Amino acid sequence: MTRKLGSGKLVIATHNAGKLKEIGKLLDPYGLECVSAGALGLPEPAETGKTFVENALIKARAAAEASGIPALADDSGLSVAALDGRPGVYTADWAERQWFEGEAGRDWFMAMGKVEGMLQSKGFETPRNAWFSCVLALAWPDGDYAVYEGRVDGELTWPPRGTMGFGYDPVFVPNGYDLTFAELEPEQKHAISHRADAFAKLVKDQFAA
Image (tube, rainbow, N blue to C red):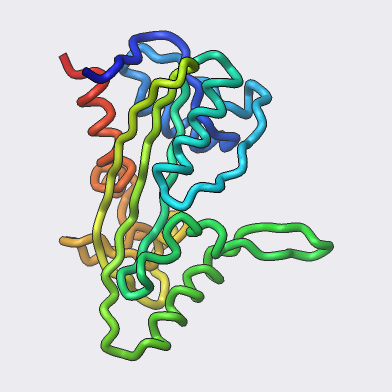
């Protein structure tokens, strides 16, 4: 039987205020008080895992152990079938670049272009099947944990289209749609996304009567 969260505080293992707001809104109906790892001054652990599950657990366990409070972390990314599942867990790394004066930042157009260039190098007929994955990991301070995995399948398109998404959203067209994730209204995207799939599984397991 899966351990249940109950009400009370939950650390969201992120230093991103936007992600805290998004996840907090999803969990608001369940009596949880969400606080970010950043707000608690917790360090960000090195994501050394080779899978989404491993990285999500690294973040959740680090936050739970450091805070003494149950913690939730997510790890997500894009996988392309013709690229043997890459970029996968290195989704964000493909967008890293050095800006002026040595400052690092993320250039998602560069990352999308890298994917497109690799596909084009394989030939015009190369399949463009791809999928977004999201893993949610819950961890308790005593070491107990639970994992929930979500996925949405689609195809890549080029050039990028739309302004409402982020990351690789402008080149990803989910199955059954003609619009990219960046062209869909946020409510539409959130209803079918990989994160929505993972959260539905978490809610069913943790909060269903």
